[in-house]
Image (cartoon, rainbow, N blue to C red; front, side, top):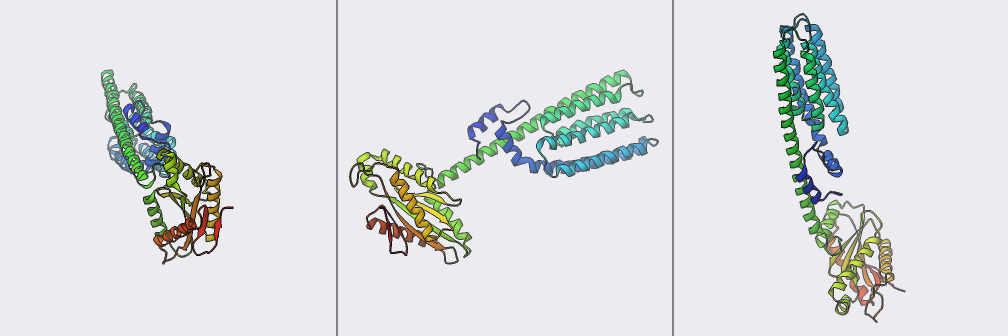
Length: 395
């Protein structure tokens, strides 16, 4: 959820209104999470609406026998236009195109109804006029156009309704006035319902997103060390479990375990707050020296750190451990041993294993830990590789 925090979501929930537009980062996330489902729903509802629209051809045949051929062509044109639009929408276009295309289709339905109303021989023009009330319902409630598009389509429908009944011989001016008010009132009610539906849908989305972020934050806390931000022991075990599950015999894994030399003396002299700051500095240096994708540093506990190096052979891992050792010593973190002012140092143990059916993460870590103890026994501030007699000592 990069770039999104719960405070932003809370503020947005509190003020969701107007044209129901989220702040840019939230709107992008909303579209990314909902656009595929939105496209599927538009297509499904459109097929239902098209079936209803075309079924009115039965009424055309009975009410407009002289104009039936022309009216049928209009319905076929609208149907083909709608099917092409649905084919486009099914390809998951950008939101502005998606909403714009479906808005045009809804207005095309309204235009088709107007043409039928204005047909010279239509003795049921007044009854057809009431059908215009269904068009805003189609756009706002059935297809759930985003509110700004719903407003535009509704205004267009009201204007087309007014044009349809202009100088209509089968209606008195009183009937036209009544029909106009009914259309305007029905459209307003439809917009209010559409606004409420979209607002509640957006708030539900934000609440679900907020809960998802909370869950991710808790998961992150459970797998990361609060002091350093590195992965913790649980995160290490989780990562090793994934690596073990993927072991296929065609790769290697190297493990480096590092321990701050004489850290108890450091804490005793400078105090625990300074000790925490020292651990943070070491963690930053180690994380900064890890340069390859897939490599990871964890705080193993106390003043110990562990590095996972997928695909690394023993000599390559030893070189990385030596680079880490040198970087920390060169940082000049002041220690008290062997004398006050001496640089802080770390000892390193390295072990590698092939990722095959016999791979054991526990055994690999134990071998790296044993190599670390050899480094401590050999005077500290050095790198020891499991299975090698040589000790890579600081110069």
